[in-house]
Amino acid sequence: MTVLLTGTVDPTYTGEITATSKIDTGKVVNTSPDKTAKVPTKVEPAQVDIDYTQSGPNQQSWPPEWKGYVWTYNFKLKATKNRICEWTLRFDVTSPGGKFNTGGNPDHWYTVVDDGADSGGGHATKAALAQARERLFPALVELVGSAGTVTSLDIDRYLTVWANLIHHERGLDNIRCFTADGIAGFPERAPYDRMVAWCTPPLLPKPWVDQVVDGALIVAPLSIAAVPNMTVVAKVRVSGGQPTVEAVFNGGYIEATASPKTDLDLPGRWVDWENRVPAPSWISIAWRERDDWRHTGARTALNVLLKDTHTEPYPGETVDWPSWRTYAAATGDPHLTMAGLSPDLWAIGHSTLTTAAVLQQDGTIIADAPDSPSLTVLRGWLSGWEKAGRPAPETYTPALVRYDDDQGASG
Ligand SMILES: C[S@@+](CC[C@H](N)C(=O)[O-])C[C@H]1O[C@@H](n2cnc3c(N)ncnc32)[C@H](O)[C@@H]1O
Image (tube, rainbow, N blue to C red; front, side):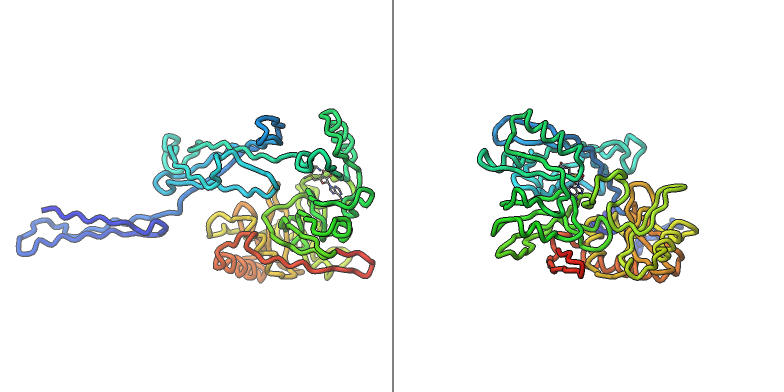
């Protein structure tokens, strides 16, 4: 007689599983010496990779409802077939009129058709499923209509003079670009019905609020901590001269600077110490006001993250960077630190005059020592973030606080 028992393990389970069997023949004599057996196995987390290429913008003039500028994204989604069987591709459309050519369903599900097992088995190294998506932005000049005008500012004169000429050659004469520091707004053409920023001011500039009509919207990336690249995009309504944040979204652009930026890898603001040799690295500490004029604290924190460091992999799942950085900023901890220790990788963490610990974008934790007090704080933040369910930036309740310094600056 054969008894077959089948069952399903919790699909989210990872860890050890041991299947145990026992043969009991009751009153019938069992001559086999093997009456029990154990088969241990290990269930590992699903391996998933996503990468994409982006191209565009390409101008599109037909059909009329798809007029605008198209960015094309080609996604490669890779996974082990028996662990991940469905994907969802979801986009945030934050610009008014933006669309995707998904046929109307941005949450469309896709089935993995090939796990790439041919490439050596297990986790695919070749593209398992390629998806092409196009994202469309109507030009601002089309949004304002023929009676409206667009005023565009950039600190980089090379961009504004070329942009003016190209717009004119395309017959778009209701848009004008000016070379100006956008932090001051542009009173010459005020008031504005809408304002959009593609660079991040240190604070929401008061001139912006003063230069819009009552009820206007300002959409701008705003800093949520005094270190670079910690931003959300805020939708700000101005009523009776008062700005209120109506919603926040994930996103950000380069820092607004007083002159055109030459080094695009280095943040434009709040870099407290920087090495250029033997390899570029930098650090930004939210506690800079308490550092000395030789930047001893910033220098030390950067050095302890570069030399004789303790490193360990982050044990959790792949770090969702926008969620993690927003959570880290929301701690409001004055020791918050952002660093660039390896090319193209940001790192967020905690530092003091003598210790530092950061989580880098590739999932590596780097600290001055295994028993570093900064590492203890960082681990606490990470477990709080996991317990909170890795909240999306959009889920936070924004608060805009007026700032006036004694030099007359405000925001
Ligand atoms: C993401 S790019 C946007 C480029 C272009 N304006 C566009 O909309 O396609 C960010 C731009 O912000 C500009 N920028 C940086 N600081 C600025 C400032 N203080 N005032 C005006 N523009 C600034 C940079 O020169 C850079 O071209």
